[in-house]
Length: 241
Image 1 (tube, one colour):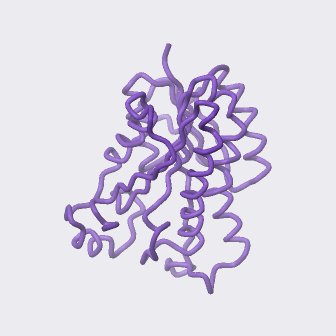
Image 2 (cartoon, helix red, strand yellow; image 1 turned 60 degrees about the horizontal axis):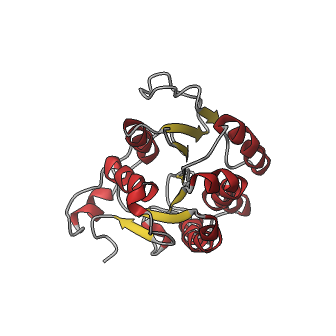
Image 3 (tube, helix red, strand yellow; image 1 turned 90 degrees about the horizontal axis):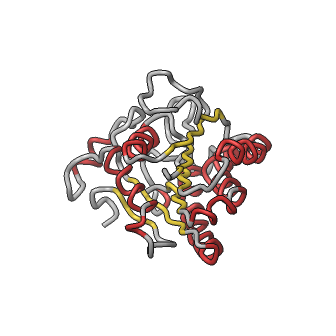
């Protein structure tokens, strides 16, 4: 029987590569994103397994649990919370602690922090039935001030790392593993100007690829990581050292 993955933030970048990786390994992938399904996406059954969902809306997120459960109709082997937002100023700059309004803080935290636990807690029975794994996507910005990532984004990712530990403690007795990955500078369509300067100073001297991140996510959801829980894996070419 094939395994099933639920992935948020599936429409581009790391999410897109994660769908391709799991699909190529024979998993059924249920995707969630703000965008409707793109008919150009190559994976089988993609449109039937896509749920359009705005994770910044608390009521919509809570109500989506039942929709996802019905779509699953069985155990859930992997849940990857990849969706994340990092709003910029009107001029495209970084929003810091002095100029981020309360509504923006709330929206960022709901997508980046609250949605992962709402979905995981809501689907705990399906995860437990499968002996499944949860992977939360944090960020290098969660452990240091980043030149591009805003204060709300950074603190929400730091909170998600702490949440990962708490979830691992609480979900473990149900046979569910919970880990996080913390990407650094990854080549996507939304790179900020100045990324080249950061990359030049990395020990590996290159930017990361989305496929490299997807491979680590796949490992954490696979049986090869069966005794790994409560950890956060840095994927940043040595940027953290």
